[in-house]
Amino acid sequence: MTADIEHTPTLPSWLCRNCAGQWPCRTAKLQLLATLTPTQLTLHGWSYLEDAAQDLPALNLAAALARFVTWPEHADDLQPGPE
Ligand SMILES: [Zn+2]
Image (spheres, rainbow, N blue to C red):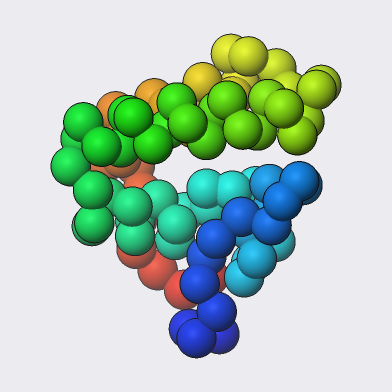
């Protein structure tokens, strides 16, 4: 685990800089949950969605909504663990 590299998106691919998964990855989500209020999460999520839609023209809207905006509603599914 490389803790010194933040789980931030590489643009324009929107893959995690650290674990190379689709961003936000599980670790990124946990970090976002720890630092933002629910309202901020939603606002940031819409902002990410707009940016990702520019970078990824083939992005499926329903999938993108779940990926960037509505995932905190299912945050209870996120289990901390090794990545
Ligand atoms: Zn990651």
